[in-house]
Amino acid sequence: MKIRKLEPHLINQIAAGEVVERPASVIKELVENALDAGATQITVQLRDGGRSLIAVTDNGLGMGREDLELAVERHATSKLPDSDLFNIQTLGFRGEALPSIGSVSRLHITSRSQDAEEAWCLKVEGSEKKGIIPAAHPQGTHIEVKDLFYATPARLKFLKTPQTELSHAVDLLNRLAMSHSSVAFKLLADQRTVFAYKSCETLNERLTQVMGQEFTDNALPLEMSRGDIHLSGFISLPTFNRANAIHQYLFVRGRAVKDKLLHGAIRAAYQDFLASDRYPLLALFLDLPSEDVDVNVHPAKNEVRFRDSGLIRGTIVSALKQALAGASHKTSTTISQAAVYAFRPEPLRQPSLSSGYMPQASRPSYTSLQEAPSPLLDDAPLETPPLGFAKAQLHETYIVSQTEQGMILVDQHAAHERLVYERLKAEKGHVQRQPLLIPEVVELSEEEQKRLNEVREDLASFGLIIEPFGEKAFLVREIPALLGELNIKGLLTDLADELKELGDTLSLKEQLAEVLSTSACHNSVRAGRRLSIEEMNALLRQMEQTPYSGQCNHGRPTYVELTRVDMEKLFGRR
Image (cartoon, rainbow, N blue to C red; front, top):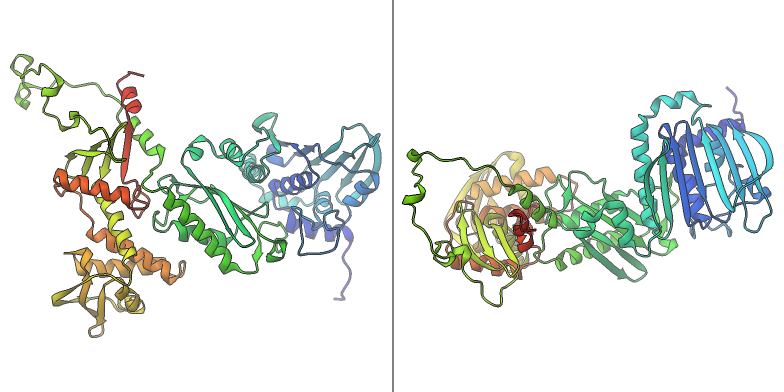
């Protein structure tokens, strides 16, 4: 077969295969064009999830007749004025979007430029231009994409249900709205308003519109600069998390991106606080010189390539950890709200005499509350520390403490686990070791032994001294003194399992942090251990002085707080 040049309409359809994956892909191109045109109001209308109709209306600069005719030609753009591919100041410039869309749909564009006396309308159907005619339209552009993929019916079978396609569109527009908080966005689907975001003066306002008040209440502000690199945004407290990463919004130079490097940095920053199957909510905005990032490596423009990826990763990890450290022992408000709901009253059952219940006449009466034998009713000191003073221990697992404005309930195992972990981290390289009078031999599988042998020197820096003993065993000579008495075999097998699960997803340093977490868990105060009031108060004071003590190493809260207002609500006083 001889080589031949492809027909223009076929070239456009091939390009459409890269750019137009689904209705959300079309919306992305059209809305980004509107933003690049300086629009302050953008309305998107959909029918059948975008299959029948996608309409985008903006109040941007608009186009005159000549620009409109060129806009639907391949490789024509107004966004690359100096032909410098590495100095891109707009959201996109590939010059293939409109002709690609026009090759697989019925494309109608009506636009009026600033100060022009009339608007112009151009129609393209299946790559065929229908001519340009005068039209009536205010300044800005209105684009309709009808019957998507009618010219390539084989693509239609890949579309999902209208509701699924709508959800993709909502996610896309939410990301664009976050990165352009001063622009008003409106989305209508089948004549129903999905959302209407007013223009905002601050990012915090826009995030509240998009992610909800609950996120705003449980988010930490973040800002860091390293040279020309600037990172800002909001990240959730570790105790406010989700089962997937769909609520992680990342932006580079104003573009929404989905980048493995950035997601890996987020996981590394939160690894001390969340289990591997839980994810924080966040919105991060990374700004850096255009020459340090290539934003045009992907046809859909949702991936980037950094000149110094290590520097970017380090900046993100440091910034997130710094913000989390500033949260101290704070935990999310949703925990308290859930506790209030859990305390909803239930009808009391009248117990029988055989159960030991004392009839009213037989029970001792108390003439005043002060006589009631309950430590919770003691008066608190005038100056109460943040986590209050311990009053009782429930089920030998939970510490009850009275605070200035209410009470808290502490999970003693989770809280102590965090304290031990932070102390182990702080003492790395200077850990006080406890030699075993009789070294313990721990038999392991060949694979487990190999994994631990690879990190033996690093384990020594944390005070755990092991050495090979035969083919399938280790001799444990010393352990960190902080860990005290423990199940050494259980610790080593857990460490080996942890290293296997992490695999190559984290660096060795990050894997060892997970190993530390396992060690801390082995030595923390277990549920079921009775504590004195002095021991409980000592735990509370350590929590106040220890960073990240509001959650254990797996992202679970270490305590729940109920304010006086919460308690008044429980009893109908509010």
